[in-house]
Image (cartoon, rainbow, N blue to C red; front, side, top):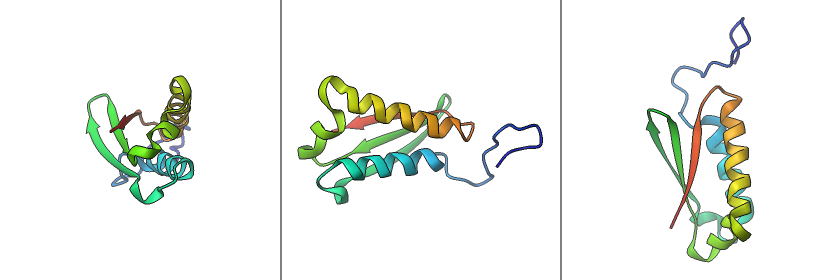
Length: 95
């Protein structure tokens, strides 16, 4: 949803994570062997929304990747999805 001036304005009452949360959920469930164990917790803050991703212990390596490259890519894609809505989102991968 855009204003006449072209700026992306979040819809009133929309969840803080919105598209970013959906993208994170899609990526995480696509990567892991146990998609039922994927959970995302949203925490609003002053600097934006924090999305905390939890996966099964056995899938942690798949989500983090070698030298954290998969995790970096996930964060970049989710941040881009949030930016398209004019939001700031960070992703934490928790044990």
